[in-house]
Length: 140
Image (cartoon, rainbow, N blue to C red):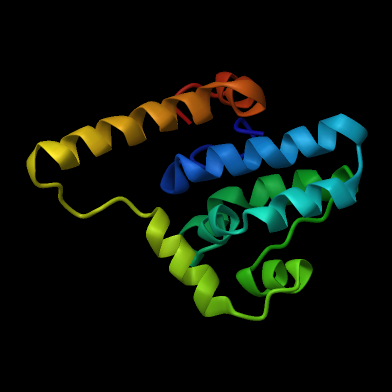
């Protein structure tokens, strides 16, 4: 997947890595599209991040590949909300804003929090299915 869409997950790390890993894991368990939808809808904020205008172009090859496997992914926040039965785009966009790292950090507490986020990002992005995918395209 990462080889198909270099840089797709980068703007939305670490949450996107965990969410994409959950969706891939859901598919791998039973090869059931409904399981994937359930995994995506259980945690839609990272997918809304990937679907933001500045990010969606990098991820388009993944959408196309998923269609080839019979799993059409939503290609807009509106489609994602519709798929998941959410009518409130504002709440989804608020969740996306919470995924964004702070513009600047102050003090030791902020440094510690940033270190935890970096470790979580490394774990979520380098372990499991997402780690296997990332290994296909180092630096992605």
